[in-house]
Image (cartoon, rainbow, N blue to C red; front, top):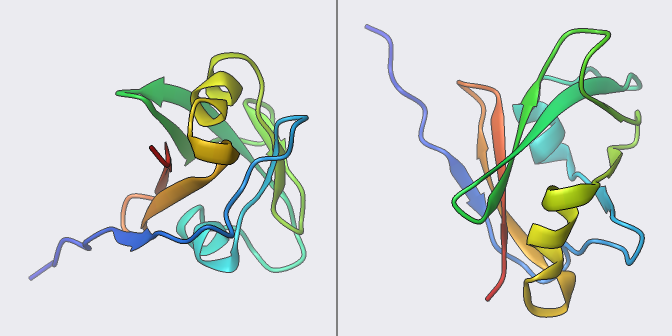
Length: 106
């Protein structure tokens, strides 16, 4: 019987977006996106319900995540996280579905 995995919620003030829109994903987030150690990947970025949704994509589409987990957000995704207190955000990692949700602190 397959079990549904519950999302892991990480709420701390260490997660912060730089003024230029660059975020660094911690190891738990990189595991949720199914990244391999020492290799980058590409993700799709969407904004839903005042949260930024990251999901893995193929080799040619989406935005690049560096091997160390750095990702540059642009446009609506960047303004969504900028709206939070001090550009801090918290995240929900779902290893089963491979989706990462970034929510701004209010």
